[in-house]
Length: 465
Image (cartoon, rainbow, N blue to C red):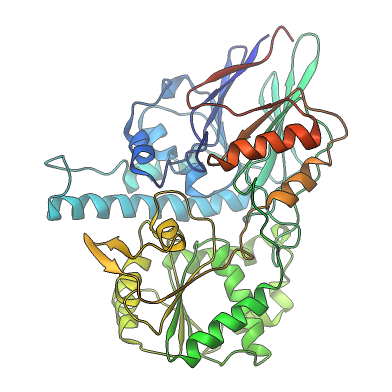
């Protein structure tokens, strides 16, 4: 029996995570993400899928972020009808995130038609809410550390990855006629000292490893995020401004809430309103109560739980309330999504706040190439929003200590858990030139056989097992 992989995404980019694994006559897709960022990448979402959707018998999902799940509705629309395996929190988060993704795409199509900037006379979304609903009956959930049989020759086990509620490292066990082989997908690895999530589980052996590379060539010391937030917040409020934080609705927003609650409780920052302007973030926050075994915060007995009922936290549920926040001139913190500023309510906040010299925009997570977030971090003079070049006159702070991704040293720390060399190591989910530099560093430090795969490349993993 032969085993091979075809790289359908996350090669030379941090988005579009998709790996097609063929084991004899069984074919499964690991992750099914959207391409985001640069236009040339986003256009890939509209290309004909490289293999017939009906020919894929199963999908395995590492975690709920859209760059790992966002193509599922389109895949189902094109004929996929197999099971989709993931952890219970991932399933719950996917319900929120995929419906939100469809809503954003439908709104963008309507706006493009209205403004006339599409090359199509009647622009359509990649998929709609009805397509998303077709995904949910296919979900099959399993907790970490359970053996899951996908096929007579293929079993998987999810392990905790940190990074996001429910995120998993995935071990794939392939039983051939003569021997058993193992493939490990790191997925996105979290940090070793995350405030809310456990550190990634150690994996000690594998034949083939797919290792994420987001921060493969960069160290982001954890430091003291609370201290950094304290300084940034106080400086902004003392200027008479508003602190605006574009944040991923799932994961980053909850971490920010955790720290802001501590800072206000300890009187390290003024007790000002913290507006959570993201319906998805509001829903996602409650999932931490539903899945306590997937994080390390005791919500039931902590002050954090009681803070949900105080004036410090304001959940902004309607678009009208969201727009009213634009009139606030000072003494407020606004957290809104999307984290890379590609869509969502954050756009109208940026449209109004970027021009204000007293305000601060705090960028708290990884920003893919081509996104507004990357342009802000790179200090571009203007940012295009709603078809207009908006001048960046506010303060912009890039805070890396809140990142949910393992940095370079943590990635190597995780890899050093392996007691024997993998036969092959693929560096994925990263951008050049850092991706290639990272691959070379693994070769030198670990003495492993490292391959930097190309988009649509096929590689034989095992033959005649």
